[in-house]
Length: 207
Image (cartoon, rainbow, N blue to C red):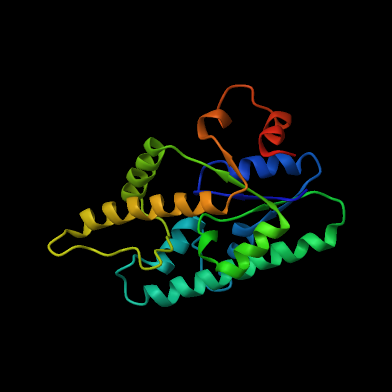
């Protein structure tokens, strides 16, 4: 059985994909594929965090040219996801885990249908309190985000207030869409219980 991991950035998708890789699973990292392609577009400073470099390139939703760069990034993400799905055919009986990005849900209906058909889709859920923390972290240190039209300030609303409100709505919308796509939903707190091992994890995802 092949797996794909979906969910917000930083919820443990890559951690568990790497745990599986240590046991012989093939780990297909969509973020890494995208980073390789972005390296041809963005020049990262010697001491610069690659995420900051991508953020500098993409800009904020009100930045000039943001929509064009957002579309370019989404194109790279679609390609990375499709290549990962196509690669499943090359590995016979070897189990594979596709480690998707937080914005995989924007790759299009056809891509998501292929992902669901080819893999057991596992969603790493997060409670409302953690979503709130994610909003606070983003406001303190913004990172590149595919807004997909989700930044819509109200009349008279400050830029900061609009960003906080719209980002919270964006995360809530993503959470709903992840759930709709998932075959398995993993509880955030359960994954952080002391002593949970790989066997227990695989039991939870039904492998």
